[in-house]
Amino acid sequence: MTSAAVPAITSAGGASAPAAKLHMHREGAVLVMTISNPAARNTVNPSIYRAAAKAIRAASGFRTVRAIVLTGEGEHFCAGGDLRRLVRQRKLPQSEQLAHSDALNEWVMAMQEAPQPVIAAVEGMAAGSGFSLCLACDLVVAAEDAEFAMSNVNFGLSIDGGGTDSLVRSLPPQAVIEILLGGSVQTARRLHDWGVVNRIVPRGTAYAVALAWAQKLAQGPFDVQARIKELVYSARDRSRREQLEAERGVLVESLYSDESGKRMKEFLAARKKR
Image (spheres, rainbow, N blue to C red):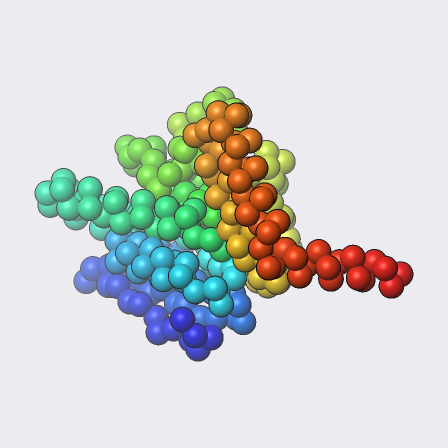
């Protein structure tokens, strides 16, 4: 994967639906992925799920990609799935929808399993699976007027894209039930107060702040950042003793790496000059 722009992947959402695209380009060591369907608040579809998962899996194998930013074109992050497509889907076999759901889940898992930190830059609305995708990122930068909603229940639908998992690991059950059953809009401020959103920024600056943050993280030690990210997510399924053992192994492995030796020497030399 080079620093050149990657061609957009296009998927038509139907005869009357606007085309959804996934734009990808490099900003130095940062891969920027932009959901592009602004006429429909950046709704997504299964082709976009598959394209995004494939791109992230590919980027995982390139050490020149040191961070990833996920954003939406225009005024919104992502309004989730196209309801018109779901209406049409009801006339098709359930097995087909299961495959589509698998593709969305693969996108979510690709972001978690990527060695690079993934940052969501949220303007406007993040709703339904768009909210789930936002929650699946490692870090979230949101505009002060950004809005978040799991509105699936309003259409008689359940949650997808790992939204229940992400929320229940971050919030008490009462808060999660309120968000999921009510289907109402949550403000960026409220989610920031709960620790779900990392940074709140002025309207129109979420992408710039997320990119600057990604570029700063891109300067860090690639292997150690990847191991820390893996430790954080694997802690969910381990006992305290198992996590202590895992941390010990990672610490020893990183201590004896060339990267660690170089960085520690540089730090001590800089301090000695003071």
